[in-house]
Length: 280
Ligand code: AMP
Image (cartoon, rainbow, N blue to C red; front, side, top):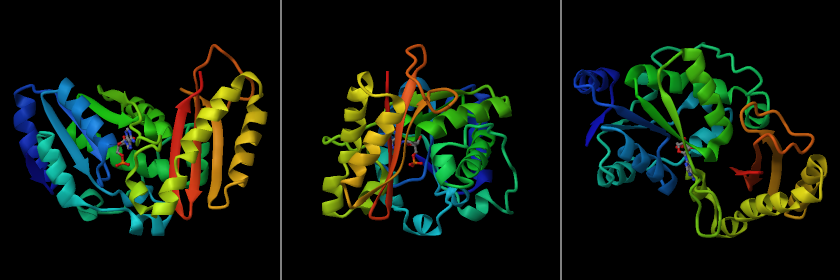
């Protein structure tokens, strides 16, 4: 497994693979890898000649400096894990390498970034679009792998590919969960033992909400979820929204002809956790 830190080294090596017409699968990550990331790498391995993994904690997508400061970094462990997974190349650039100067590019994401994460994390998706577009242009993958865990991000990346007019397939990968249902996340390592015990409540509530679809309207369901979190003093509900899966438009009435996803964000003593579930 090759590890590169500069764009020059990376592109020089990629060129030789591209000349041999090898298909490249890209897995962009921010490191602190867990089984969720592993599932993406394994899927990419099965579908491409070459797998490139990137590890970069992208500062332009953090609206909260404290979240950026506390983001877990476990590079040695990550590289060991990727070596065992037989990834071909890992790109670990510095901030200066990816942003030699400030990136002022603004992406037209339509209304996709006006709801949920976009509403609560000002500028987050523009930052995501900045780094992902740089990686796409640099690596020119045939396929790129993203988890449904960050559902809104996945929809926005699809839009980005349209804007960039790239010949690239975005592969959606299912959410990998702990045994108790908590969606795996690098941020879970920041939870104390007590907080970790409380966290599965998020997924449980999503499931209960889905069961109540037959008896409650979307508004009543939102109120019900809000009430459940009011009873949990350690947890603060940022949002619970049921959205159409492509437009991310909030659903106000049940319509069986559209695919719906229930999305949630919760602060658990300052650690921000997100999750989602198909509401079909
Ligand atoms: P991150 O390192 O958190 O930026 O995530 C990198 C990629 O891994 C993104 O496409 C995420 O959606 C995906 N991912 C993170 N957690 C999970 C999970 N529990 N299951 C599946 N994919 C995940």
